[in-house]
Amino acid sequence: MDAPLWTDTHAPSLEDLPQSSVRDRLRRAVDEPMNLVVQGPPGAGKTAAVRALARASHEDPANDLVEINVADFFDRTKKEIRQDPRFEQFLTGRSRMAKRDMINRVLKESASYAPVSGDYKTIVLDNAEAIREDFQQALRRVMERYHRTTQFVLVTRQPSTLIAPVRSRCFPVPVRAPTADEIEAVLAAILDAEDVAYDDDGLEFVAGYAGGDLRRAILGAQTTAETAEEVTMTTVHETLKDVGYDDDLASILAATESGDLTDARKTVGTLLDDEGYDGQSLLVDLLSAARKRYDGEELARLHRLAGETDLNLVIGTDERLHLTHLLSTWGERAEVQP
Image (cartoon, rainbow, N blue to C red; front, side, top):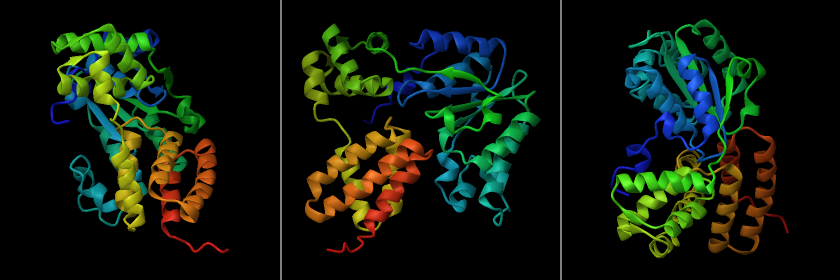
């Protein structure tokens, strides 16, 4: 999709958020700044809600909102972190610094800067379920030290992975998946703004296709509008029936097969972070793609490994880690004894 994404060009304000309970809780955070844990399923609109809060809270959100995806640290090498233009100003000349110290320095420096406008700034840690416990302890200390000038917002699908001292310093904001009616209302407003024709059946079809994932619904409507110039049941069905992530899933398997685990891990990260997948759904779809590609003992071995991974995804805290471990182990092509 070459055009600007509607998820960006039609980013909601606080009043546009479909879930009334989220609107009410975030309004309180505008009037009385507080640390937050914004929690909910993939695609529910957590990040969009946080950005709406920042626009309502700050005169200069471009400078007073700092967004850090946890994957920017924990899934990258030290060299990649040092070369990131967002972080290099904090890490210049510190090539021998341990990764944990690099992370702590970036966080402390970001928190210590005075807000550009108003009395405080906002630091968002997205995908916070992947933060290791030792870093959470460091985060707690930074939150305590800079609480007068910095609001911390942790965005996560699994709030239970956060240690009690961090959770106790944050006000919880549950973000449930929007209902079909709420999704249809959001889509109607966007399509009206874009001057795209639609009918109720088309909106209902997109909402059903999205399955509670607002981001997926908006991008599905945009894909249909760009392809067919209208959003009706017929055009949605024709446009979206073959839309999926088959190519991405196949590329993960192909990269693993060729020994390029870095590329496979990158695509897994994209599907988890940007496309609304959760770990178990991605595992199911990977196995489905594998059944089209392999058979016999090779496929059976992958399924045996997947059983252990499925358990780890239920009880563990880092979906990317468990899925990457599955691919790494399977990619070794260990010889199976008869």
